[in-house]
Length: 393
Image (cartoon, rainbow, N blue to C red; front, side):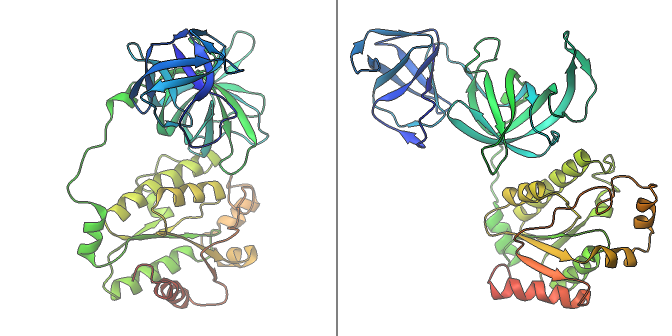
């Protein structure tokens, strides 16, 4: 038996009568139930139909309200299931996804998933293949475009109670949305949970980030420099780290070109690879702030969604988007490698600012007009901002 909250329920926590629908099986007064993923247990003490009259039992598809003993605070998105034979919970799945949006699906990009009444943040981790034709032939794919259906893996920020779509169409289906609005991008069906999701657990560590930061006498943060190729990001980042080092600060500089020689050497410059490039760097930056460091990153990071993803990984008040703003013509004039000329000649593909988009920040924490000041002056402006706002120094 599984019972899901009514779709109209929007509050984060519900107490008293629990309204919803029997998603599968039969529910009877006296049944012992488990609330997932909370893992709390209770007994069904009463079942009421839509007009409040009592019922002894309810069946699949029936909308009812329940009284539980003891009374539990049920969270939006919880599933009630038979205590003796509960459904599973997991945060990683292989799913079938039907893509509806005009923009292609990109693995690694953060999205919002809706399971019943519950919204969960997560991302597509792998696009395994697309399905083609009436026989669903498997086709190699690195993305899905509007009208395509494919098989992908997803990773969620928290575990959900589930069944496969084959077992139960209500519990096994979900919608996928933009992070910031209600535009639906895709419909999905759960195939199965990934085995590793239940085998991996957090390891407790004695020393936490606050102790590491205290040892270094600083507050960790991420200074995320973004801008076009040739805007001056790397030069300013280098000057900034030099000045911070002279102040006795503990830093680490992650530069786009340098990282692509090692950690990200397997990635190209397609939109999908750019998303994965920034996902990996944001994870590294998070680990380094946990170590108590001031992290300076210098990456084009052309998409707002990925810069927001990086911000979301870092603790509140410790991520600062710094827009290194230079006109395209200035960037081209500075280009010692001749990459812009090659891109305009069609010799370099997916070059940001030419045939690949750059989405400028709409509200950066700091904007540096790099064509007007020197790198040392730009670095000083950033440090002045940090000191003025008592952020890290």
